[in-house]
Image (cartoon, rainbow, N blue to C red; front, side, top):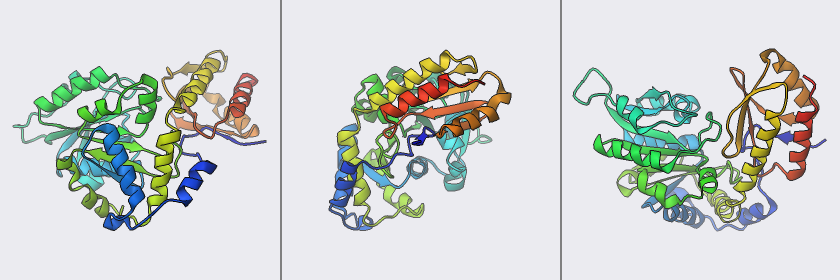
Length: 342
């Protein structure tokens, strides 16, 4: 029985066509900025978002941490949602790498509003408090179940940042999902954010890699920060070739992941053993069992059918649809859910 792995969209493997692109890539030493395929990927994404520069990173966490370092000084503070990836899932890197603290906002499904940003800015002349210098948003939101920001809400946050001289960074690990879902223009995000990180190894299905995109005044030191974080790489153009291929061939198909996620949501809502199901917007489904004590039984039932999903703790479960989740798997998974006798 073929395994169905729905823990994350990071579990994908390169397609044959992507592997071919990787194996035929022209490469050089990226530490010297002599890898032509890396340079092409960076130029492609900078142009896509209408920004000055882009820089390839091995991971999204490193790209986010570099951005925070570029925006802040030790002892300062950033504002983010309480569920933000930069706070919850990057190993305490905000404090470890940048000496910065987080002011956590109680947003809606991981998304915050302009008025909440205003409420959480520390008075700049009150030296007892950390100086607020940065706002970090996440789109789509991971713990928020793939929720997408409304562009008008981001515009209002941008106004607040301009009024208070704050930087604005976007953790766009799944931004491509949001762009496809809402039919938005990447350049609109480029106009609003000082820096944007985008991940190639989630919805687009590459083996690794994220890219930090931004304005020249900030990005001029990005390669130095990447080096300090241990991110200097050599013939990494093989990975950049995967990214270029994915941008050209896997972007529009994200809609398929979204469709399958919506269909799973609809099935879950009909099942007696399922409690709350969060609204699905993109490729992430978050739900609760009706009876928490059935958790072990539910896990064993899925294991019996060679299915893996994520237990997020505190009663939450997560399913993520992705490139390697086929229509055949989709139909089987729905049947398994329907046939459970918990």
